[in-house]
Each structure stands twice: as C-alpha cells, then as structure tokens.
Length: 169
Image (cartoon, rainbow, N blue to C red; front, side, top):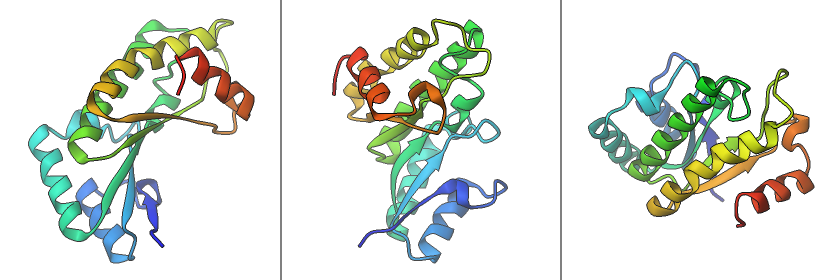
C-alpha cells in the first residue's frame, strides 16, 4: 500500500525540500504540495529549483503526486474583484508549469467562493477554470475540482455540473 502526505501537515516554516525529507522519513511514498497564500511556491521556485526538488524527491523515493491550490481561498476564482480572480488564474497557470516540472499529475482546485461572491460566482469560477484547461491538457496535468465544505461546490451534483460546464471529463 502506498501512503501519501499533504505537505500542509508539516510546519509552514519548512521548505519544500525539508517537507520531502520529512515525507520520506515517515515512510510515505507520495506528497501533495500545497500552494498556500503565504508560501507561493509557484512564484518562489524557479525552474532549476523545481527540477532539483523533483530529483531530490525521486532520490528519496517520494513522488510529488499533486499540487493543491490552497491560495484560491484568498485569490478566489469566484471573487467579485477581477484583480483577485486574475491573480488566482495566474497562480493556477504557474502551478500547471510547476506540476509538469515536478511530475505531479494533478492540481486540486478547491470549489470555494467567498461570502461576498456575486450572483454570477458560478460563471466567474467556471471561466477561471476554463482558462487553465488548455494549458493543463498541453502539459498532461489533470485539474481536479475539490468539494471543500462550502455550499458553492459542496455536493456531487454541483461538482458534476461544473465539470460539464467546463467541457466534460
């Protein structure tokens, strides 16, 4: 049985390199790397650092399986502020490149909105995801919508409808 760890289980002060070491130390073979608002690895790790992280993970027997867009809780794709949505899309596009370099096959996108989300939050979120579909397909990275306990995409029917609205599987 393979066991993976979400990098958020480790202290926020740890670097991705330290998190890979800790993952291997506890015997896990997979790690999901969080892209948190206070740790924007997509912005902070250049291509050489990403490649080095992948080599380190491979040498340690750890697969970086996915990235999680935790930063979307702040830079929300359904925000009423276009500047916030644009940052969210930019982070997602950067994450696609990062996932490809790290060998991560998927990016989790939390299906979250904000308390002040406008009536067209569904369309805004869909449009943000749609901007990433082409680049993700080109790089062989899957985008996975995640139900996160918010009414916005909380149940299976809503998740399936959003997937359909984004063009299918």
